[in-house]
Image 1: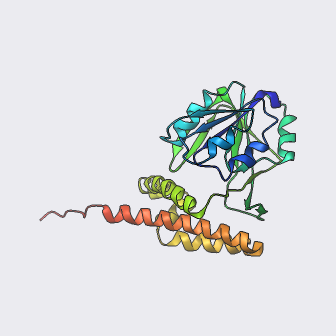
Image 2 (image 1 turned 30 degrees about the vertical axis):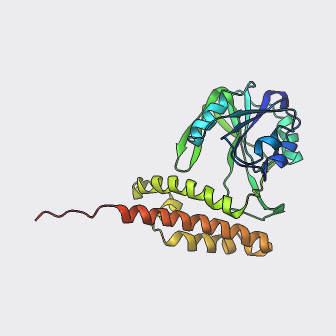
Image 3 (image 1 turned 45 degrees about the vertical axis):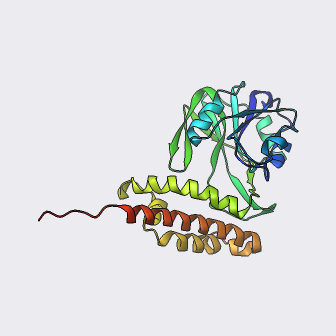
Length: 261
């Protein structure tokens, strides 16, 4: 099965992560890196791996970037990765043995979140589709992220992907500002009845950061993971504070309602 899979990674200033991810992909005949004009050492590092092909494209949206990436894949199956995803050996062994039924067009994986190599007991990171058939899927934009439409059934992988982002806090904040500006627009323009529970909590603006703090530390028990759990909690709360600020700014910018005299 491995010879039918092309790993694809989207990058933009990922010098802190890219080498670890590419090291675990040396089994692939070709790895496609779609780079959004990085200004750090991402390209320099990626070119050290002989099976990597780099294509640069100016970033406009995740949906457009992944749709473009599809055109670069020569094999039937695409392994869609972020630069901070690390594939452990058991994950690679599982996809090597896959024999997908005709109706299964994609596979979903759960994630283990790690902070500088220290694995957490839980996280808020949801399962995602990571392995998909090139000819039976498409992308659409959903707030700050992208979603996949799969023409067929989705299977579940047993092995988990490790998410271990080692970028600086400054870079994390920059990226969250971009993400949360888009997410705020989605929440602002969605009717209350159409929002899920998380979206309704976020729309209350001041509630979400405190809810995430309590849920992460005590609901997910990350307080038991020591400093890695505290770092993860801090990042999640910080992201919600940024989102709350974007929602507050947009609410404050609305013109006052005019009343008939």
